Length: 441
Ligand code: GDP
Ligand code: MG
Image (cartoon, rainbow, N blue to C red; front, top):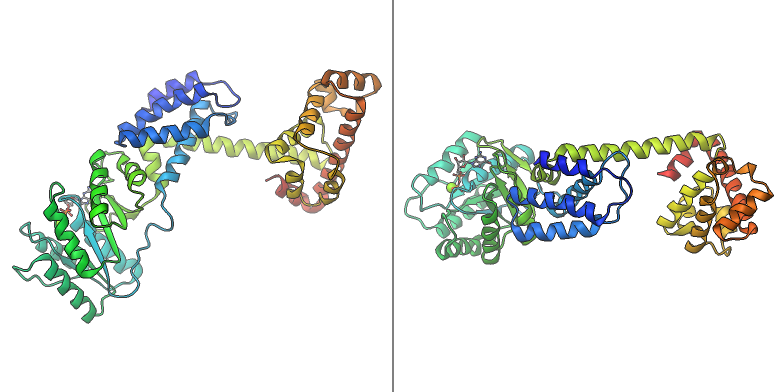
């Protein structure tokens, strides 16, 4: 994939704003990347559409190509979709004993995840945890949880043969209350596929204990199917969060995106192996990079943007402090103002600029005027822009005429430039330019 994208990037090397073509070319590759990562087709399509809207017309950072920039936008958008609200790792387990119901298909990793999570609650949150296996279908399933419990030092409900899942759940609840447990975790049976019996069983358990959290355990490698499973479980039982297992495998974790986009349920944890400590809080950044499979590009774009902005700001700072504020600087400021909602928006952000703001009030500075001022500057030569003090009557006439304006307008612009230069110099002297530096952030 990286190679294919590399090719696209080579072709897209021009600068400026992202054109529709740039965006479309890059997004075609992104769409393939999503599908290769097992993101479901409708989710991939909707996602790409949303990005296309956002990306077209954005300015391109000088040191990266449009293709790279699109990838950065895609990456940010991915994180936006993946991230739920709040901290994924904090479960609602106040009001002891709090029941946590674990559901999912057979082999998805429920039992393993139950034990991992119990260990985490015990070690990190100092909770007293009781685990109970409700899996009456699979022989040795209960023993499996018991063995894990011994291994991690978490109690399990004593096994009573012949009980049904609801009875076990009730017994776990009683035991948890009597034994002073903070949390009791119910590990349910799974099936290879969703069927009505499985759902009915899980629903009966839910009604018996009223769980604070119902965590759906999904195999992160299953891709497409994961979405159907999640939708079904959520519709029938109600899910409060998702745990993606096997994220240590080769899969790219596209299931995460599909699941977030379609069910809207927060992803809480990811399983990263068979060991008992291989459970981590879900990190959208990590999964986003993995889905795209191009973490380096994202890092590169971020670095390029940061470096460029910093270099620019520092260079400008140094010059401003010496009172060097020429027409090029003014032009940049004017263009910035147009972006930021005009003169008032900008001055409001600059310390010590209240006086100038007063002067500007009622002077009719608006977008149209900003554009005219930029036109005046555009009509100057390079030399004139860098040294506006050389402008004499004849030059002024030429410049004003070139922009289709009066010399008096140009004089106003020159006065503004001198005032700004003055102000910058004064601000530069204040506390090593701290104020100005802040104003420029
Ligand atoms: P259950 O049927 O849903 O209870 O699934 P189990 O918890 O019994 O897990 C089935 C298999 O998957 C076991 O061999 C686990 O060790 C393994 N497993 C569970 N979670 C993970 C994980 O995050 N990564 C890996 N590599 N294996 C896992
Ligand atoms: Mg199990």
